[in-house]
Image 1 (cartoon, rainbow, N blue to C red):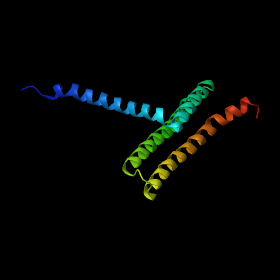
Image 2 (cartoon, helix red, strand yellow):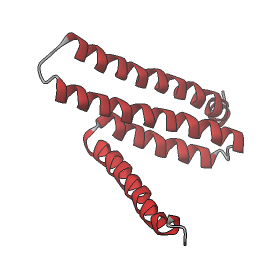
Image 3 (cartoon, rainbow, N blue to C red):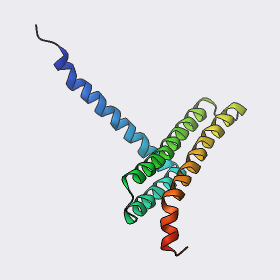
Image 4 (tube, one colour):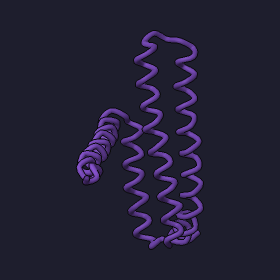
Length: 132
């Protein structure tokens, strides 16, 4: 008797493709509604342009990619937490406020770490370009 696994494989691929679609839809929805994410998108374009201009090494690109990915991920998680908190606690509640504050704090910590990476990678190059 033939193994039924080959018939299930295309369905599995469709499910995985749908999952990616949902994820992209979530990123697009957050981009439309979250000003901070729009700022991060502009900053990402600037950083990519600077990286191309200064011809970063592979290791430097890896650090920049990790920093950018960290900030984007934290901002998306923060957006999701805010949405859920607003859903379950439409009225002000101290714990709801704390959850939102802690999530925003995580974004802040990630952004400061990304800034440190940016200063370490781009600082000397920009300084040399400006004659410092």
